[in-house]
Image 1: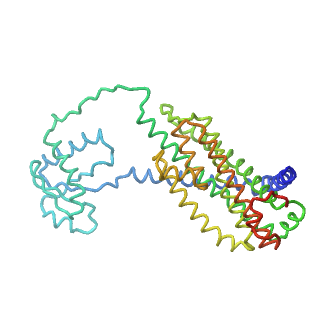
Image 2 (image 1 turned 135 degrees about the vertical axis):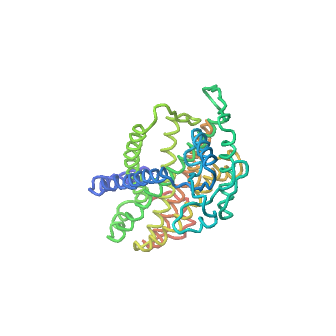
Length: 396
């Protein structure tokens, strides 16, 4: 076992140096930042578009006095409501019938309100009338009240803690942690496949297999890619933290996970490592069987889709602590890291995490062992029945 670990560290150092010291690694680090920048740009564009008037336009075919009172009521209500909450009011001609005005080409008026304040009449399509009926009723009621419509003053009584707000904040932290770990795992674990297939194509893997145990090769590659992933995570995490500090409102405060931020972040790194090694060990087994990149892509798709389903299952159970779905998500190896990081955000007990990490490490060993046996049997054409070797000590 000692010799195997020494060989695994040699393989890990070789692969880690080859990846991190290459010029393309800088592009790899900068790559995920481009979608974020583009997303922020499109987000700003979207907010700018949403800030423009895309609200439905309601035509006011009412006497001038009633139309003015409707507009004043809308202005008073808009002071306390979101800008996009109420429709736009626009006066239209009283000379033509509302149905005829709605039939005009290029008219942006959705419905027309005629009649009086006490008996407004809406003309338009049934869906538009149903959608805007409540808004027009509210504006007309405020118009009838005129200056007697006053906002009731609410006396603030702030508190330092709120169990409901704390629970909701911790639930949000757990969901965000799940999403971050999931996308980082999918982003980084696929590199193992291409690395292994490339070395198989160049016959390097056979040379390594003749020199060191196959278990050490698989474990070393997994360790190297995990170390490379941590380099990327620290770079992206530092960039994201700096951006967060730059845009953070000084008056806002973040909810704190149940275990506290230092321990929660440490568990987040551990559970990412476990999720990565679980999926990575499976990818190593797949890459060991594939002969071409096309075969890798064919085999990679079902695994990725299955992992997405597992993530959705863990995300479904995040707000059901102690329920059968949540317990099943904790026990299932591939969903266990996602379920446990959500539990760390909501529950401060430490011992379940120790058991879960040991459980996940056992499954990493089992998956690597099965991949090694399949590699020996189908690629190196050596070894007997895999059921006889599965739990046998790795001797190469």
